[in-house]
Image (cartoon, rainbow, N blue to C red):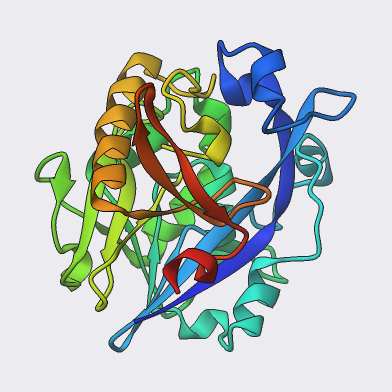
Length: 288
């Protein structure tokens, strides 16, 4: 098994929205905002070589939306999905599986591209795309709170292509999905219905968790630091405690999709709950 960090670019979101009810004087210690109260966030994907499979977890915001749409998110940085795949030695045609933690535009936008003739098609022609029935139904019939995050142009081409497959949820943790031994999923419902957090057991015996929006950054480790975007914030509190307690006790490495500075971290138990142990700008810094 080989792991590659795939940088797809950075964007900006309101700091208050990203930290919910937590006062700015607290969250700004870890995530200082600009003059518009915007903080920089990464859109970091993970590429996993396992056997004869090449699995991409999430794929950033993409490049097919309008200039007006992108102007709301202040895209910046030198990285893109295609250039990062190329730097890792691959192209989009090499990807065999695209695992979508959930279908918000900053996680799934790169899954679909616009051809020169205007047609919207899957960006990875040889890949199987993975979601789950509960979340797919939630995304294709969105509630008013999340409607702006679920874009039909990111979703319908996947279904129409025949490349979309559904993972069956069998409990809070579903084991060995996609036919991959040791690739389990922690299902979390606080941010959005049936968000999937993959737990990857490496041959060396360690566990890597791709945190998606259950833990966007190291600044979100304290339990009360919950995004204003979460549909069920009290449930997120419960899910974070359950997850982080286990991760700290079992020494999991947490891959951070949105932390602008840190690609991965570990947690440790303290008298006030789980807190940051180590953080590193690259996955290699913690995985060895």
